[in-house]
Image (tube, rainbow, N blue to C red; front, side, top):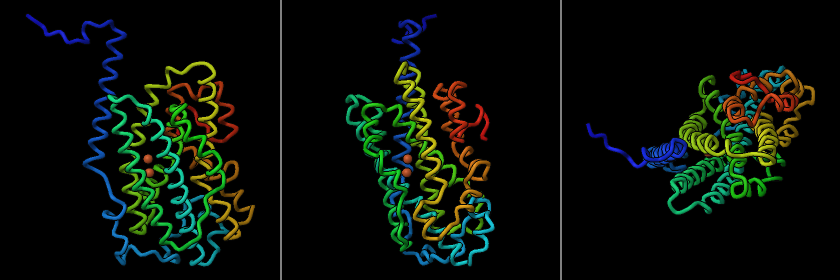
Length: 328
Ligand SMILES: [Fe+2]
Ligand SMILES: [Fe+2]
């Protein structure tokens, strides 16, 4: 019986595997790009900002921190008057939104740097632009949310220190750049899912924004993971050392920013040092939350050898370590 030979059948096995992998990668990117066309959101058309039910009152008890939140669980927080608890909770959400759009600004610029250097036939180009457009919509709704709280919000200073350098990694060291992407996106995603799942009587605006964000971020993280699985196994020597070192640092910084209140919030509400230690110090509730929030990117580090037994002691010292396969 005659069997049709395809072009790839004639290639040596190794080469054929590469072509097959390239083909699967193209199909994956085409699927993601298609999803960005049929399932995407507009920051203004798809959020009813002016619906009275969506109005923000800083003393709305629905903004209070969750009972299992590191700070929300402290006796100090629970002893505050109800309006202060609500305002502090809203301030925390607004600070995360502020961090979110600043992080997305770095992300968009880095992706544009990466896309600028892609060859004409690269299927990544189109997907990268979909991602930039989606991030721009997210920044619009994060910004609009912060504006409507009427609160003064200052992001942690550390965020602005290395942003140009990280953008440059989009061009010079995309593997490190996409680990930076995951270190930011994964913990945010984890926190948002946790909130949707466990917070009773969620404010509808917070819920709407979180649901849109979770839907679109799933694509961004899937892209970053595929990209890293393809590229990291080819990295060797000094570059691999730098990738291991910097990815670990990025994970630590990103997780701290996404879980701790900013210095500005600490000063505004006079949160005592002892309370911060109780909530965020060694062995705290927050430490466990961070480890869980970092589970997926950390697993990818294990899988790709960016984290291994030799590097484990350093991850332990930074309190972001968990054995492979374990969330904590
Ligand atoms: Fe985003
Ligand atoms: Fe994203």
